[in-house]
Length: 137
Ligand SMILES: [Zn+2]
Image 1 (tube, protein in one colour):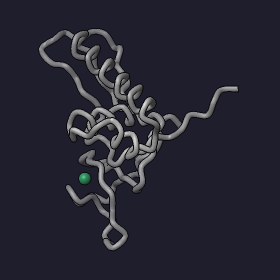
Image 2 (cartoon, helix red, strand yellow):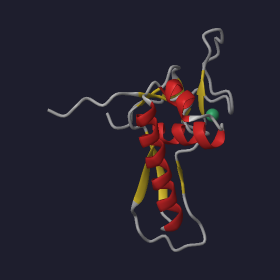
Image 3 (tube, protein in one colour):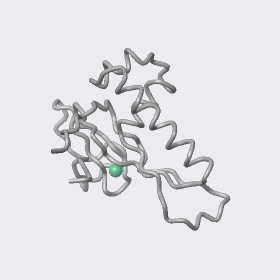
C-alpha cells in the first residue's frame, strides 16, 4: 500500500502558471513540472533568505523533508534553464491556509478577506473566478 503523502503548507500560490524560454526553437513538448511546495521552498530559502529550520517549520515539514523539496526544486529549475524547457506549475502536495481564487479574465490569484463583502477580482473587477484547488484531482 503506498504511503499517503503529507501535505506541505504554502503561504501563497505562485503568481504565474509557468515559465517559457525564449530565443530558442523549443520544439520539444516536454515540460518540467514544478510543484507548489518546491516553488515555496525555493522562495523561502533563496528569495526570503530564511534558514532551512525556520522555513521547514513554516511549511510544516521536517528539516530533512524541506531539504529534499528544496533540492528537487533547484534540480528542476537548473534542468529547465540548461535544456531550455518549459516550466509548468503544478499543485503537488501543497495546502494553503487561505482560500485562493483565480480570476478567469486576468488570471491573477487572490484571496478575499472575510470582512470584504465584494467577491470580485481585486485586479480587474471581474466576477468570473474559480477556487484554486488541486488540479490533480
Ligand atoms: Zn481579474
